[in-house]
Amino acid sequence: MQKLNELIGQVVDGLGYELVAVEGSPRGRLLRVFIDIARGVTVDDCEAVSNQLTRVFEVENIDFDRLEVSSPGLDRPLVKPADFERFAGADIRLRTHVPVGNQCNFTGVLKGLRDGAAVVDTQKGELLFAIGDIEKAHLVPKF
Image (tube, rainbow, N blue to C red; front, side, top):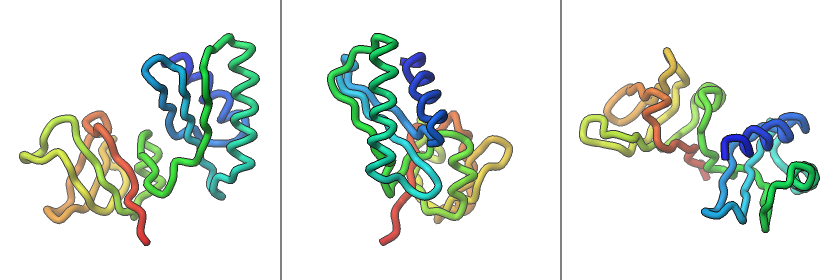
């Protein structure tokens, strides 16, 4: 799966988009690719990436039944350290691999990165979470 992620990343980056995440079904029959771009993702963007990935998969003999390309949505996942810098000031929800003070789920305002750790202003004050200790993090949309 790592090699596939690298291949998808090269194609997506080459087209000028950011690869947010790749999800696959257990047997690799369904591939979901989430892309982003500063101006926002359009249907035409998804179509362009889908068409290019389909051609590359044919050349590379990558077997799949269905490919879905979409934006990460309003509740975009935060995966890379750069995501935690880019979305500073946003409301986030995160879950840690191991409890921090008897708690694994946290919500608050992302303050950015400090020494490789996400800084989050929570109800309990400012907390730092090492990127490797975060199981899942995503934006909380405001309506």
